[in-house]
Image 1 (tube, rainbow, N blue to C red):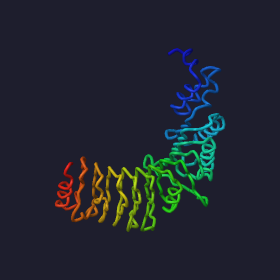
Image 2: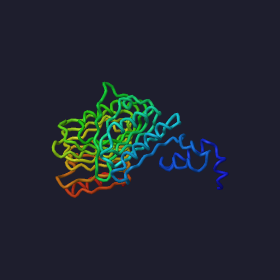
Image 3: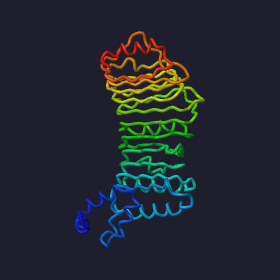
Image 4: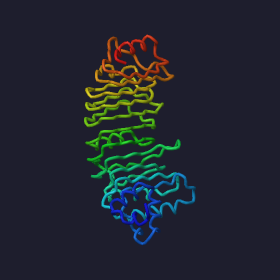
Length: 320
């Protein structure tokens, strides 16, 4: 395609193409010609990545992000992606950028940083549909939520978060403020002393939980998730796991080191089941009678579970 053909493309098509590339490359197209000088300002994705930059370029990176955000002319930002490895970046900068993204009616936030202070505007965003807070390169960042009295994210559908030092109660306060939540991935790395966790999420369809806290065991986890279709559990030291109303569950993967009671065995709708134990003891104490009539895919790795239990499991999946 010649440069003339590219110049003749409709502005919405040009904006779409520029939005597919990292923002720094979109900005660089401004040197092509006078007509291209301001086209990048109408991108719908803002994608900033400082992972591969060296320390000392923090101010350059910050100035670039500030310039782009202030120059953005789009009425709504589909994606605001911020990945940086610099630890010296001021918290106020990140908070300001997120605040500006909310002002631009952002739909998706994708963040990887060492410390994030969420602005108050975030907790009442009416357009946010997806929030991802990353763990990358073995480094986990922490959050200073500074929760307002009320959290209400009415359009949030997907939530993927990690809690390192923040109280787990903060995670539940955030989750409860998402009435339309369908996909939840929660990784807890902190040593919280709470012993009972209750999830009542009637809209949830997909749930992934990783509990990596060794110091304090979990007595019970209760799930009220009547529309859940996919479940992935991974962690240590949970004695009882109770699921209520599992009529929609079709796929489950469980990898708990110590789990003596799992009400999953009463679920009759499962079609795919994966069970893995750990080195600290048996994964499951199987009930006397159970069956998975619809399971057609079975993946088991029960090295610490009695062989007889594993054989019973296979026999009770007649279609696997």
